[in-house]
Amino acid sequence: MAVNQSKEALKTDYISWDGKDDDGNPVEDGVYFFAGRARSNGSESDWQYIEVGVDRVPIKITSFNVPYAFAPKKSGLKINYTLNEAGFVTAKVFTRDRFLVRILLNNVKVQAGNNSVVWDGKEPDGDWAEEGEYHIELKVIDLTGNSSDVVTSRR
Image 1 (cartoon, rainbow, N blue to C red):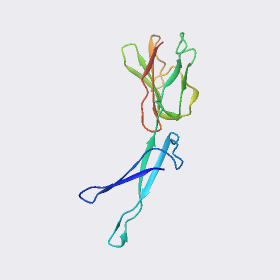
Image 2: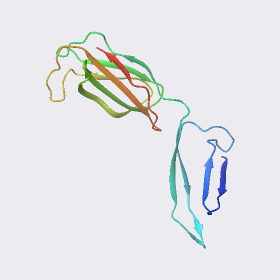
Image 3: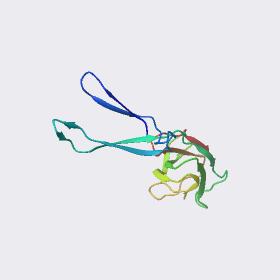
Image 4: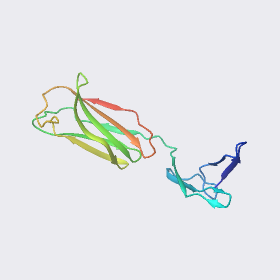
């Protein structure tokens, strides 16, 4: 692993990492930790840890499928989606006029691949939603904090 150190005029040290392992190969996407401590006049500080995220691939919702027909009082609405990597998903239901009806998922961690969430057709108070047009909004944030585009479907 290549680590560069520099001393500036005020005796401030900094360390940079090129994102490669000891053999010079780029590390896999993920979270890594730097550990270090300072030494001054013969005494050492406590260990300090810094978290660094490596993410070369943007997170994407690669498919988003909502059935066209839906009657809230008769059946649940299954929303299928596919992610190219694991992330935290938020799924919301809005009326045609963009009034928030229900939050189905709120920053819930899901794995890469095929996933789904079901709206039971009810509002937060347990009452059935009115017949009408609804928008399903899906957004995902990957494990290093990068956001996907928001996808929306009308139903």
